[in-house]
Amino acid sequence: MNRFFVQLEYDGSRYHGFQKQPKTSKTIQYNLDRALTKVANHKISTICCGRTDAGVHAFNQFVHFDTNSTRKIDSWVKGTNANLPDDIVVKNFFKVDTNYHARFDATSREYLYVIKNANTPPAIGFNNYLWIKKSLNIEKMNKAAKYLIGEKDFSAFRASNCYAKSPIKKINKITIKNVNNKIQIEFRSKSFLKNQVRSMVGCLKYLAENKWNIEKFEDVLKSKKRSKCAPPAPAHGLFLAK
Image (cartoon, rainbow, N blue to C red; front, side, top):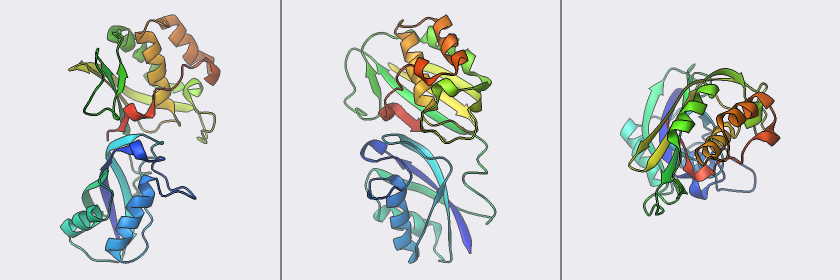
């Protein structure tokens, strides 16, 4: 039995998230497993490093699968891509030891949220950025982001249907920068709660629009109440970066 890690990229605009769901073929995993099954000539079921929600994209999503089939790496890549929709692409395959696990061996996950902050909307990447015309206060966003660093109770940023055992998570790093009128917000942690990143971005956005002050932002975090949180930022601006 051989185990492979697969590195993939996708535009999640047309899909109901990564994980397979009953009664729909519009998930990343459904299409990936189907393509791998055709190349392997037997049923393949992948396990991912972290599930993405509906509409979320990925630059570097990793999954693993087991197979008895023997193929060259190049054949796996070309064969799988030939059986995938154009908005899902496998970038590489890596043969690993059979005890390696895409989810449990991931040391961290990094998400990127992109806001185009300009007078005109994006033409290229229209489905991949959140467009905000009003000028945003990045300095204020950076100041508030410091309150999110470290191990904290993130209940205020947790979806009501989140099944994580604990709301305690540790955020290792947040960077916010403006590159050619695109505000790029990066979050790094070993794991995140459901909707946590989009909820944090929604609150940072309220700050940047001067709807909130820093004290309000801090109070929301301390409250541990979802009802205090700003609306989550739309999914189409979010990427699983690495």
